[in-house]
Length: 429
Image (spheres, helix red, strand yellow):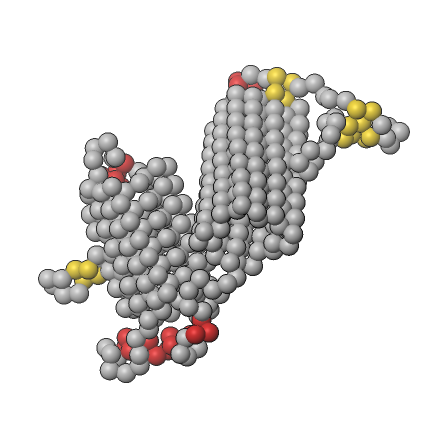
């Protein structure tokens, strides 16, 4: 066995553009296209913003400081790549091979790393006699120290043994993520959704997990000394458990539907205030008009298509919940946490009670970081003081929406939409 480091090929931006154009032709099955083979290239500082490089080969390459913002790298081979200080903001890395990659100080904010592989890795080639010639001397774990993965999607990603000290995973989606033996010392995991994650043997000492969701997470032999777990959701109920309800939930839902349909003459109104509804079934497309559920925990619950007009949902926890196509006209979600919630096509319009009375949806002070509100109706909704950082508002109807004091950092929204909203200063627009 011999040890060797292959020399890198440095190319210009123009040469890289030609390779990428041919790769995009290959991806579109056009004549003259060819898969990009950029293994062992020096691409440091070059620009690949928004380009489609899915299935490209970057094995052993250096992309230090490269701009890969919103680049498509699904199933790409980034084995043992040097991505230090690279910009991968909202890049798509679904099923990418990042074994042994160095991601120090890399910007992966909002990136999609679904099922990506970030385990240990070393490079080797076979000689003619069958022996191995190692191109990277030592087998090293993926190194993401100091990287920013806030709100990144790491669902089912493999990070076993990864070095992630001082790494920012704030509001990241990490359902089913494999973190066995990972070094997460002093990492920030505030609000991270770690449902079903395997953190066996991981070192999480000194990390911040404030408000993290750890439902179903495996914590066998996990080092948690000094970790801040304030407000974290575990398998223990965060409020009144469903078992404490006077009747089974499905029976209470039936009684509430009767109450709504009979204008209060039969059935019984439903009050779920303070109840932990994680794991509850039967809420999708349910009749929940005038539901009272202040401070309830709906984290990860499927409420798609539900009828929740004029619901009293103040200060509820809806992180990661599915509210797509839900009817929330006139509902109050003041102070609610809807981080990473799915509200695609949801109706948060005003509700016309009579010719002279309108009830607007109230989302004052709500947390909507990274929420998907694409196609949602928000006419006259009050979002004053709401946190919409990095939320997706594409095609949302913002006519008359009050955005006074709202945080719009990184929000996906057009100038035309903002011009239809109210409460914004010229600088905000």
